Length: 67
Image (cartoon, rainbow, N blue to C red; front, side, top):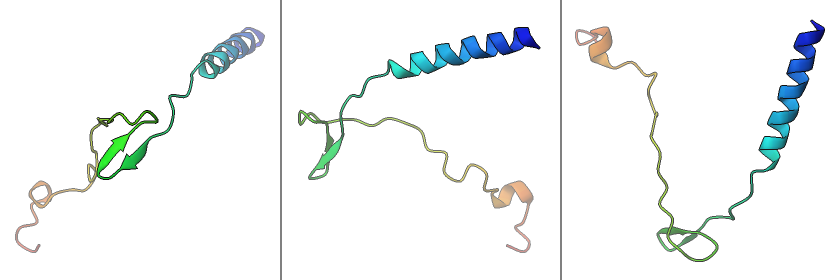
């Protein structure tokens, strides 16, 4: 158990210091219909949408007879 606590402490310290080295890249704001950084350069936000991924569709539950 003491061995586990030592490893846990060392890993925690490493994670703490690695997270502290992340630097801020500035704020984003809007300019009309564009999203820009602090220098006024356009920023393209990329990502994926998972909206409704747990909402079952009618064809999954075969509810066409009553829905």
